[in-house]
Image 1 (tube, rainbow over the protein chains, first blue to last red):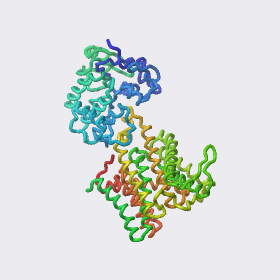
Image 2 (cartoon, each protein chain N blue to C red):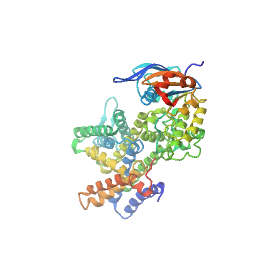
Image 3 (spheres, one colour):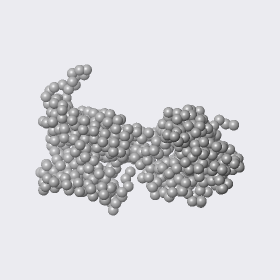
Image 4 (cartoon, rainbow over the protein chains, first blue to last red):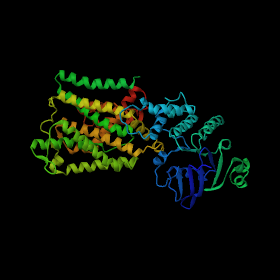
Length: 249
Length: 326
């Protein structure tokens, strides 16, 4: 078994009396899609924020590609190859779709402090950016301002931006949110292909997508991981059924 | 409607044609007004890089404008009085040579912007506005209370500083210097806006969290933008000192900060040539209405209100019918 790329041990975070992360252990292994599911308020977003560096944990460690991430900023972690998409689409609205992706290529190549050459004439930026857009099916939408894109297109733009980071792991925070059934199916195919690029930690409410995509599933309830296992193991786990899947399963 | 580059070209052509015609008709005062427009527009180009591209609402750009002005004034006053600027550790004399004064003004205001930026860019929103204002007021009161360079009375420059091969006392030749500086700065700012740096700066204005998440630190971007912005506004201050042949603390006052901001807003925030449109409109109003009533600023306020409420793209936005910039 290959060493995990992301290794979380004993991660704990309290907001006052509320323990939102309770000694969480979680791994992400190369080539896998590891889905994190749980009811609203289970602490999924807080967990993602701690991995990205938005929120500092009270205890526990997060190791990424062999490095301890504690004390590193969001930007530093991103440069290590941690690509995150947001629960609510987060793009620069007045920049075009292509410019949004170019910005990411630029961040990954450490070449921001160039003051003279027009960025749009810079093939080192536009080339990869166009490629990533084509990969998520946004070919032909390059010159459209991000604010004009449809909701589904914006989610795919997010993925193109994540791809452009040439990441060592994806953190996808509800990529299916707000997509219709058709959009979900399309995105599921794109995500399934993406795991060959880098492993994915997937937070998602859409159970069809989770069951179709995930190699492993962890269930988070009230800040605790109550079960980790394959799709079938989770489906048949009585604790999970009572805590979360309920009558749906 | 018109394309933005057509509007820009027309504005620049107008700025060039008016003083040429006025000079031919023997109206040096109009040439001086046009020079003032070019200098104010240059100061606005500086602020626009911070305010328009970076979204940094600096209410303290008078500090850079004034520091540039004092750099010119102090160097010139030492040259006039034959007093060395310092004797230890280096023996430095004052100078009236613009080729030395400009770099000194640019570096001095750039350093001030670095110090002010390092501290104030840790805040945002209203706090940023207030801290930049506070720093500018500190510089203002320092200038008032420093008797060596005129204190409250200001500092005269008896003969306008020199430029090799030109007679800077000739209004048209001095205008040419200010015009070329404005044009160079405006073109530089347009280039900056389209560069990798500009792309990241625009991105950070619209969505700082996103820019941070791709590994670019918005703080460093903004600091660089703020310093470049301060340098350009400082250069404008040095030219303004030479235009008036006088430097006073009023260049450092918060009203000056507000006026530079008005140039940018009237012309269109983030438009590369917006500060020219704004400064020209401001001077036109001041010149034409100022003679009619001393309450002309009431009308200016009304205009500003209309722009903010109904035409956020400013004058250039109205002429091009596009509200998006970038």
